[in-house]
Image (cartoon, rainbow, N blue to C red; front, side, top):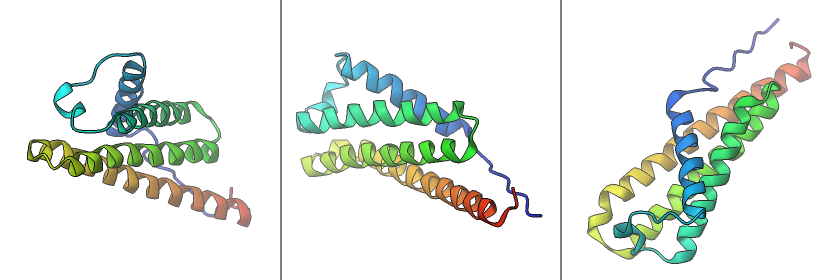
Amino acid sequence: MTTIVVTGRHRPHEVLFLVLSTVAGCAFVAGVKPPTTLEQLVPGWVLWTWYLLLLFSGAIGLASFALRDTYRALLLESAAMNGQAAAPLLYGLALVASGNGAAAFAIAFCATWAAASVWRGQQVRQGMRALRQASESGDT
């Protein structure tokens, strides 16, 4: 009998980013002004897309932690990681398009955040695949 161990569902850095995304997304949607130095470099639609992606992906990721059904929790976490990858990627690309060299640190941070989210999303999908295979073979 195969034993499946799903590790790392509550990794501290992931939880931190999900909480910060949810809080920042809520704050920005509610009208709190983000730092104006970078905000001025990107179009308004990028900002709103960034805000909403932060809000919804953060909330979905946090909701996944409350589910008892491991497969469904991983499904939600996978969706959250898609948003957590898309939000900083969009914002980082908008900063790159601005051509302002002062945004280099923010661009690097966004690229690293997006890459980490893609990596975690892949880990989650591997866990889902293992659960499906175990379920199909009757090893659960």
